[in-house]
Length: 216
Image 1 (tube, one colour):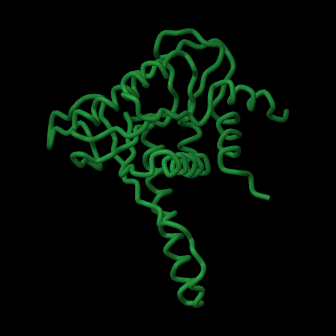
Image 2 (cartoon, rainbow, N blue to C red):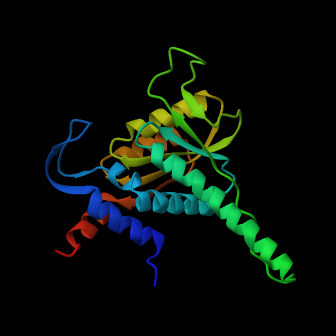
């Protein structure tokens, strides 16, 4: 029986992205563990699972979102895979409708059609050439968007992305984090998010426990 996507993703993060040791984080804080989610989100299966899990959260909690984005480069694979997950979901829904129609199964209701979630990336600084844009990809005034990040520690990169999206005229409708280290980032993000949902898929304790439980 296939493993549920969230559980499978946790196992991959615990296997590929979690290390015990003596580390200094980007924030300057000391830690006895390190989580580098990019080794999972840039892994073929890890990227697919990340997109599925985040897209499912968006459909459940922020269904009116039009796009997903975040600060390069931690958010890059999350944005791409979430957007792709939305396109695959819509394609599957369309295929079910077409099959039902061909077989004259008019009573088969696949539910509401999934919506496409486009992607955008926030540069750490504006380009000094070309359009000079700080946001690459989807950009529409008044659009409802979701900000994503892979690991939230102090929340600085997430807050930067929130401010950039708002500065470009978009409405931040929610914030998603793959792993919350529970080191103060949530407070900063929720203050910047102005009451919209902030959801984390896992906590660092979830990942640590899964890492320790790994065989061998």
